[in-house]
Length: 327
Image (cartoon, rainbow, N blue to C red; front, side, top):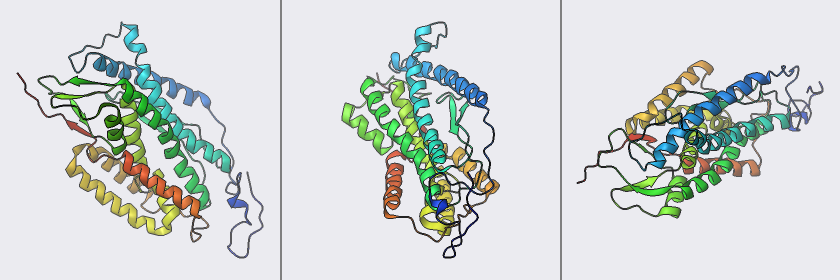
């Protein structure tokens, strides 16, 4: 939608209209949608996550024992839906949170693109939407940026609780070579303790596929909330701090580099973040009301975004499990 050409002499941007739902930047037009692209990618992601989910279920079924994924056993493939449906629900909620916030403000955005990938742990690289115009004011930028993490978090929490209730405590094998230890975010630790307490030595929680989907959903939420550039956290930081958010971006990149010395699993995310900053620049695109502070309600929501980050963050996401030898 367009806006009138009249301007407010007090602040220099179109009179009140940028702050109203349905406002979009002048002279922007929505591009025709090609839903078949989104449908094909979604179906491919369903397939890739079902295969990975079947492997997770097979591992869960044998309690850390050796297993072979038999694709001819349809019950194993069908049980991949525990993971696939949970994962896609979390990712979908996140992206549709952004999408519907864009629709609310009349900002031209695509439907979510789901990304299938032959990755052994996840089966997907996540999902994204394309925002095809400049977001003109901070309130819109903040709401669109925070809507995704909140929506994904709201879905991930019940998935975590259900998945943890379906998990069980099992004895670790005598040789854990080839096993990967998952770093536990605070929220994940709390849910594990709530249902299973502290497992004795030589035992560990055998995670149901839904619990693993929730773990990945929490990690994805934390990654998106890093206050860097044009990540969701970067949008939130700019809306709160304005141009000072550039300093936060550089400081957070320094923290990421430091995290690679804590766990090598941060290396890929650090490289991708640096590439993003080189491609788009470290400074967030300006809004026309950069000098106008956010209202108190949104400042509280920014604080909630920080709490979400703390609850979902883990300093060592993936590490090889120490070899355990027992008679």
